[in-house]
Length: 230
Image 1 (tube, rainbow, N blue to C red):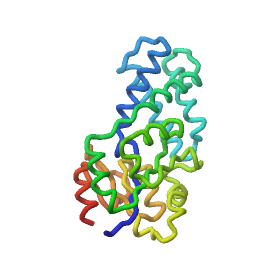
Image 2 (cartoon, rainbow, N blue to C red; image 1 turned 45 degrees about the vertical axis):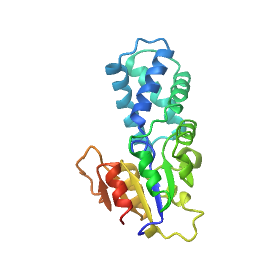
Image 3 (cartoon, rainbow, N blue to C red; image 1 turned 180 degrees about the horizontal axis):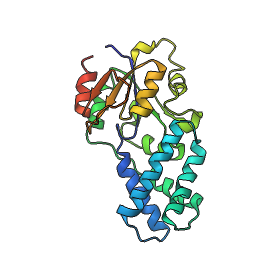
Image 4 (cartoon, helix red, strand yellow; image 1 turned 180 degrees about the vertical axis):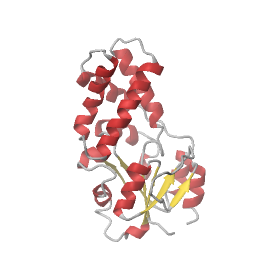
């Protein structure tokens, strides 16, 4: 096998984060007694949340501040006053229970678990990702689950990959492959660290960046075939 270690991102690669996010946000809104309108409340939140995670990738905000600041911005945008700390806690409580795997995730991981050392590296928040990932049926197949908030380094900073591989003294970078759906976070991070990358691109988004992933796949089935044959 060309590779010995596979580093997976969690959300939108193996886990359906969008489903978990939508359910958690709705439950938090209802918990605060608001009349929920998905097309208004959730769509407004998505724009704010996407922008603030980009700020994290660029080093403009910390994760500790992010998890509260996004709901402060939401309150201001909606012009609905609520305690952003309490709302953040409610949202993360519901999100931590949203462990939804994609349809082909289990088959993929069970098919390759004996051929590779598997790792997960995620930029998610500890209180959310610890429960969501570790309560899943595939968690037992991963050697480690590295959460950026735990170590104080986020993708695309190459330091998070250095931390992930720190105990694998006999592994060369040429034996490591990063698999993820995000060009700006993981593919950029893997490139920064000097390892091969595989872009999981189920929506067939055009790559308008200067990044050149080593591989590109459009489904988890295609990824399975790739990993069993390289």
